[in-house]
Length: 511
Image (tube, rainbow, N blue to C red):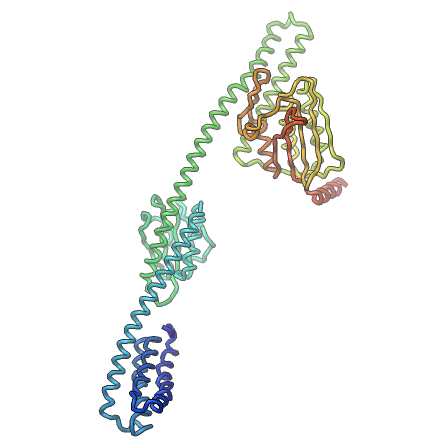
């Protein structure tokens, strides 16, 4: 056991052990005259037999007998006469060496089998742990190949996906493949095997191609080359079968999770579609009805209407058209956010420039409201999509105007704090209950205000939250000053050093 896989050391020990036992035998003979000195050599033989294998043990038996006869039997230091009574000694030595060596070999094989089984069990446990965190097919096959390489079973291991046209795409690190390897991979990709089953095709390069299924279809082909050692190939294939069975179950689980997620997404899309149709049927019909009514009055009563009445009807058409345009713009923005393809074409922008454009857009909606601004001087430039941030502030101001008492003031205060720019938009409305402050950012959700206020589409604040989050900022709902009204706080990140660089680059471009 001590000299396992070290044949030279095993045979050296078989020769040196009897020589080392000789002085001990002389010492025993001096201390205990008449004792059986062959027991010393027998002890050395047992040690060698246990530490090595049967062949070195037999060599040690012969060497021990020769050393015993040469040094311990008379005439000493001579092999010219082999005493008749010493002949059973060598037979006993050889028998003991054979039996002990055989038992040691069997014990070694059992220990090696137990160690191999323990190694496999540990690999399976590690595989199970890692597969629990795997979500996608690519993660699963990468974990599989990593475990097979770490176990020492495979010299190389990779995973590929074969499309309907026979194209090969690597799911792990790319490998160099021969024409025979590619042919075997394409052949394996057409051989469906249920989860837990196994088939393989070996090429002349020693590469095995194994189809990996999730129980319903082949999801990948595993290519592997075994290490060259004493372990039979069939034993290695049995290990791979165990690992592949476990991986197939994990693939089935990931596929089930993907199916559930797809089903949930389809249900959410159906709910969104229903809510969108309901919202469109109401919020598009209302301004269209007002526009149709005003236009019909202009056509039918043109001669009986004075200039002021015509102007009032035309103004109504314009306002409802603008309302319809804002609603359609919100729908488009919400569609982009829902598809997660909202591209942020950012640039360095001064907050004052964006605010001036927002105030100009919101002015026709004020109807007696006044807007007070409190802006901290020397604000840093913001690296944002200016059009989207303008839409965010417009949506918040439109809500504030809609739900505030007539002629009440609105306040916009802007300051910097801890590397961010904080924008507070305060109104004097009835406020938003604490239990509804999280839900107001949900799509199509509107807070009920009674009959005084018309319900909105429920998209403005959803778009606000999505755009600000895409910029790395936050939106909060706070109580207004002295508990009156509501404060919508928008926080946007601002890097003052980068802002200065951006301003410098802008000046260079301008020059």
